[in-house]
Image (cartoon, rainbow, N blue to C red):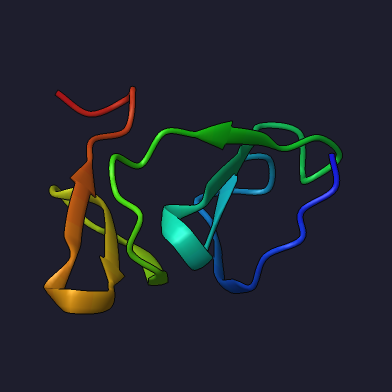
Length: 77
């Protein structure tokens, strides 16, 4: 996969699984230490600048124009 857009932040929840966020709402996800990456639908075209995990809340993504997105992990209820 060739990505020709700006990437702004990367976050790994453990040794295997991580995400990258970037320009134009880009979210990439890996489950194999970054060997392969898949594009996830973000639902926005705003630039995404920061991704982190908040205990008990899930993955949080912050972006341009006040964009805030939350995703629960599959291990969370």
